[in-house]
Image (cartoon, rainbow, N blue to C red; front, side, top):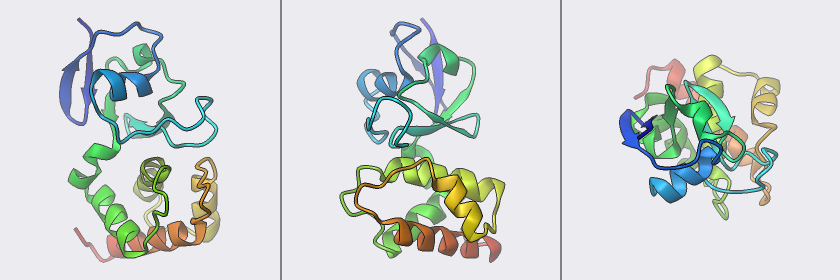
Length: 156
């Protein structure tokens, strides 16, 4: 039986190799934090990390994840950067409907790990593939800036 490494744990799965990772995470493993948005990798709601690289789980076949470390929104509280981003999200009341927020947070964590003090342009570029239908982009940007500031001060 194939295994996935999800949030630091080995998970046995019983799914066809071409099943999208999104459905394996949600339906097979019960990890519903990662959302289905468009099914075409256009909206970012299904963003997860594969070896610390953001991928769209709706179009990533589970077979492409074998042998790689998968991180989902469920693991972000245990990640220093993830924790800071989530706190900033709450403090800035980023979530309105909340549907896109898991993917937004995963993209923001990737940005801050690669660029701990991003410019406005870098934030816009990194977040451009994540759609928020409620339009909370100014709050998203403010939360990312706050998390970046806390990172620079060594916050945990």
